[in-house]
Length: 138
Image 1 (cartoon, rainbow, N blue to C red):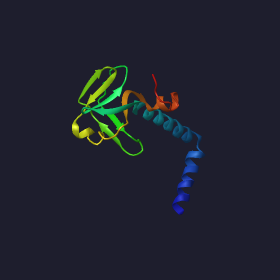
Image 2 (image 1 turned 135 degrees about the horizontal axis):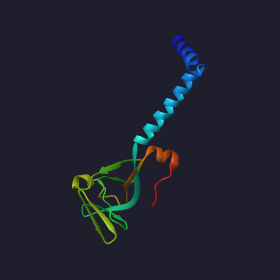
Image 3 (image 1 turned 30 degrees about the vertical axis):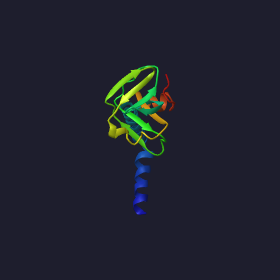
Image 4 (image 1 turned 135 degrees about the vertical axis):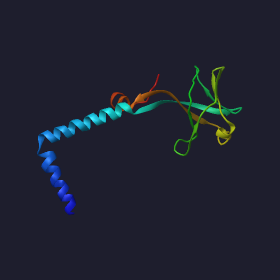
């Protein structure tokens, strides 16, 4: 109890009552927030409905996608599989991501899969302040 009141006294005495220290604290906090939010990069994800076909993850798309990482799930709240495709193939409006058999063996018996594909990057500052958290759509 005594430590809390002591720390409260220091806080009030040096930070609140002293305008210069308060402004310095506010300025440093704002700079720290800005530099951290600019330096943290987030993936922009596009979600596709897909299925497993001949040892490959197939999604319907109108253009070729080359992604080094896929996030595949049936229900996002339960389990999400992170898979690195070995090859990419685009044929007849479908994008095929060829993967190792051990990566997709748990997914073969599911009828409908959702595939999140990273399509770009943005900073935390862009996502939170400029786009207000809205998803990226082309």
